[in-house]
Length: 598
Image (cartoon, rainbow, N blue to C red):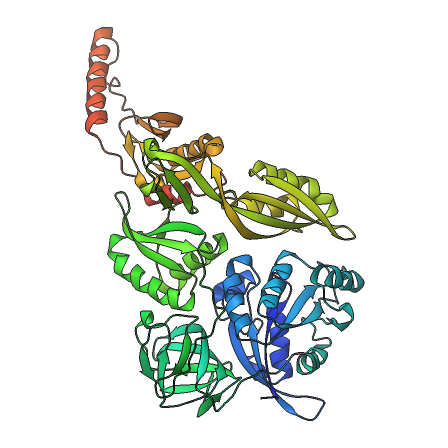
């Protein structure tokens, strides 16, 4: 066990975690040269295209150190974006140490600090690494100052590298062996293993990724899940390399995979403790926290015939992504669908993209919302994330909405625009911290609902891409939240209703009305589109009627002939307006969610 090292790579987004993982794999000969590619552990097309890691991946490497011993290195490449911090948390539980990566040109950023606190929560040993030293803008001394000031780590332990060009990679491997501790555990004790990840194989069923804490698992053993109490027999186990590498047993301290013929996705819970039925352990592993969704949106298939396919697709995705939660939903306008909970807007975007690419689903999404706490006049409390279930305003005493503490790291010259952006989004308190020469941290307490629409894009715009954003949940605070209904031809469209602060209700309603007016085709009668709070209309757009020139055949003659034809047309349009129905195209639901006007 002294020859095993379990570690992960943590950093802010785009600091080079996946590139460093590639170089470590190459240096240990973990993959043949002909199979090597950039971001080799990122298996999804969407990860490669966007240059982000979405799903943590485990890779077992063999390394011959300078001390003459051969070590087994279990590397876990983790995501950097705040929306996927749940993946990071689960990975940290499987490790004893972590490489904390800092970009030499950007310095310590928001998510770096957040991941540091996560690692300290699980008492991990940290080894700082300064990446991208080959860039013209690289400032190693400043990065060392920030590692000392912001992270509280020894700056002289930091290893300067270039993951892209393979500079000083051997020093990282030696640092892992020398500075990160080996795992502890008793191979002869009852089996205790953490199920920290899982994915679905269409031929083998559920493949579980486990970290052995105690005991030894062998092929043929009967597994028992401590949370659910269910039991399964092991068909195959082994190490996670680029392809699965079967073994006869997994011992304490190792990270590997287990296949137990589990076909039903609902049979397991990620974060559960695995033991054996014959010699079960006395207590489960503590410290796992289930993901709490903060952004909610409803998904509906474009065609109602695809509802069952969407249900199966969400089931498979929920196994690969333990943070995704969903329940059945229905809409008068869009039919049957699912109400889903996400960790953030990028998480929502990625799930939508994966459903589209991996399962061929064409979807309509409703506007994202957060979870509001509604205190009713009878003293009860209702938690509402869906406008459909918003109580009657007469019954509402007060409403509370979730607040976050936002941490925005920006170069000094962009502090003004960043603070102004926070004020526009109802920031309650704003302060600044000086981190290093030319870099500041803007701290703001603001409603989570304000971050859902275009905040991150605006921040990148006003800081020319240099601003980084991270947040943590604070508490619920009183707020003036209202439900805005969208009426098309005097009929309420439930799928377009949304919850918003009263200050911003008219602006958003006007945007909805204008986008719908552009998207809905013209009819033979005039169609009003209105945004209303209760019975009060706050915004309106009109779709003018298509008008046939009924007087075209009248040339010359008495004016009364034309008036007679126009009056007949007027009566026909009034009748049509009374009984006519407006069909809203699918594109209209997508158009209202766009924040721009293109």
